[in-house]
Image (cartoon, rainbow, N blue to C red; front, side):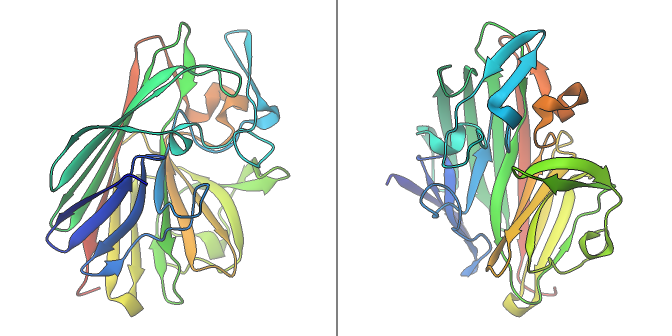
Length: 284
């Protein structure tokens, strides 16, 4: 597997061309991402494009035109787009930064045709991951962006990520309806992530979050560009990880009013967003 290491000071990550995914990430020798995802279970974070999560019925309608998808994993619904399953090309790299590109052609599995780029950079305590996508098709299509990192779930870990609404889950791992956030999932103040099945979308987020692992003497502050007003939390329960997934849209947005935050890009138009993770290892 073609993996590229970039590092600065005590911060080091390894990125694979396969899936454009981070395979490992550590600060001062402490891993802050867990390799638990992707087709081989070895991805610690992967890109979500041209959108994240599932498409109900594997169909969508845009401007009166119907489009269909085919499953791209063992899941019966098309899942997480194409970037995490495709091979990315290296455009530039040095000791502290890496730029990858990806091209996707429309076909039986997905009707989207687009190009994408992804940049990684590390500087002292900060990891920046920039993602962009450009519609190369012949019609306007709904696009979104997201990141799918896997964080350690330790007994004393806490999450701070204020939001206004939670979406309940229904059959097919799809969002059901927005409700008031229950107390155990109200991360408006630092709170442990419950060690049980969680697979919910949160909306009304300001793009800032903090994770603390006191037993690891480690902290991570997450800062997102303004397009990211939603996040997903996923953990299967009885696991050593949880996913905190910033997204520019709601899951299954193709079947929601206004596409749930997905942006209709005309041919040639682009969408871009940045995730910054700042690490700390003392004074948590």
